[in-house]
Image (tube, rainbow, N blue to C red; front, side, top):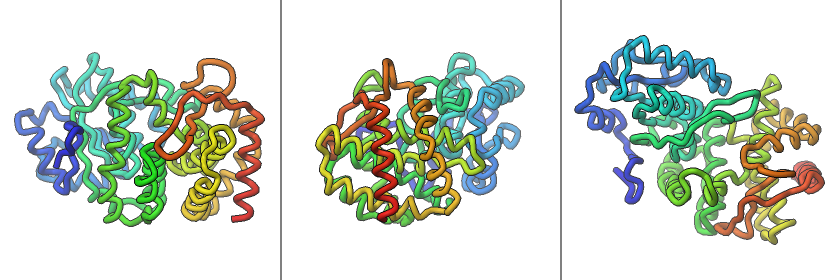
Length: 362
């Protein structure tokens, strides 16, 4: 099924058949697959019958550390050794790391070859695989090197979600919460009444969530203006995520974004008049689903929030900043937002103090 207005995004319950249709006129020697150790084991077998050549599959280690220039170079060399051409196709089978890294290497190899994203995590289905942002990390900072490059197709099948642990579903759901906040009250109510680990329920609201991102990207493909709204929760979230990469318990992207949404909404109450009652309702939802995660994850966040100076320095490195201070996406109400809101160090520190108070109160 293809959603109207999202011609390059296919929602299906038969991913192998969709790929076969897409590749019917493509020689299999020109089809390459990028995957990671987990998706190679659990997801690649679901593509049986597509006719992918075993030697054309490149497997990277699972995790954010693979989003590096070194790994990108290995993929480029892999494609060179197998005589990939300008008319070759790369299938990115995996989560956000695979989508970001695969899109980047495809968009730069021989100045660009076509690629298809087959996202296998909720996070990548609702966010990373859609919109044409690609990237790798540099100097401990996320996505500092990258391109804008639209995939030929994005094939979304929720069958892959059955292979995921609960923490991965929660990670992706944070992006769905973000999309709902950007969309409006009706979408937000649906999300707040959905259990993040109910795959059947997720499948029913996934197309609507993807459509929110698609509409914003279509209006601003190169992030010159309104597309910055998609960074809601990410200014603080990326700082938490980058800082956690320096510890033994790095956070999942969505875990960090969930906390980032709390801080963005806290600042929105103070600076934009966002409803305090609704803020507390959303805080309670985040608390119930993300603050009761594995104790190591919570301990990591507690520890990171003790060093607001370090987090502030990381926020200053954010690509969206173009002057002094830190810029946040803030909300007046669900569906009504503004970008490039300058927030002071003192305001950010006050939001952290509020989080500590509300967390201990439950």
